Image 1 (spheres, rainbow, N blue to C red):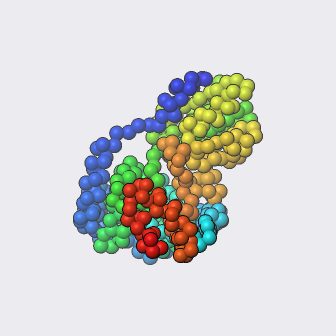
Image 2 (image 1 turned 135 degrees about the horizontal axis):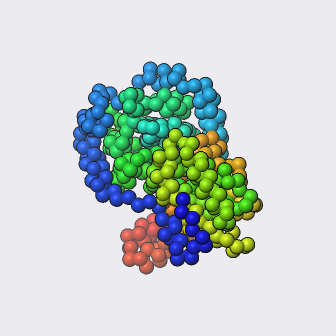
Image 3 (image 1 turned 45 degrees about the horizontal axis):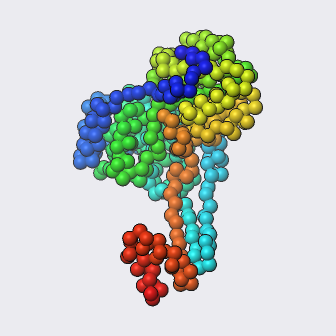
Length: 429
């Protein structure tokens, strides 16, 4: 990992830069896939799956028997872990239930805001070398708590042509039974447009590769909502002398192993600590089964050192807010005092015993978070992500009489005379 000492502020933008990719070729391919599915339905899905995966599929729907048999293929240890994680996720999201807001803004003018569940939602869960059954818990549990009436799950089959048993088991725990063995941009297209067997949804959630991400971005222009724009996963660790070098190195690597375009950033206050972490990263890297992936990610990762007694702490916090990390770990003295100064982060992990993997799996917070600096304005997934709000207003005649002059004055000032007339007719003016 590259080590940068006391960078001038004009260099911060470069140091906060994420990996860049040219998606022009991918975009053209994804547009073609979307159009094929939109016009060809199930037949197009079968053709694309045969072309991409080399397997013939007569039905993408995973049967109840397959879902049921998956439980027997999952170890008791994993079942126990899923149960505990699900309980924590459920407790945290249950506490987020919004209430109704009702205000009489002035006599005779009543305003109300109510939150309602999104009717149909689609979940995409990646498969392949790392089937993310944990993400299914993070999405399906709040969808159920919110009251979404219909949940559709698309997830690709493995090399054996089967959906990972752990994904099917997690789905059964969450009460999701509309499961389709379908991956890639074609799965996003199926949920966005609908086919003969897959009904269209109103909002699509879940991570994926560049094809999936591009497909989600494109369908938003066609009237389908998505959870958030997504990029490669990332972590920043803020550390001082109170941090444990082994812990910090493991946190950086836990993010780097996600994918070759992931990014891990350490911000610390000592050149010696930076060198020790870099050495420990190399030592732990050699032990990882996914070390080739992590090693590639580390090429785009770095260590930034701000030295000094007081200024360095403030600079580290400022740099963290500039970067706006998806995951931010604070391994510093008085970590909550630091956390209170953080204004841009997807999720913050406080202290030496709060690894990012806790939030990824089982603490209860949601691990679907904004990346690419979007944490300055976007929030991670919460219960409200599966809901939408409607406002209501009721005016009595007396209320409209009191407010009428205000409305007509503003409408006429904007040149919208019909707006003003809608009030005048009611008041006999």
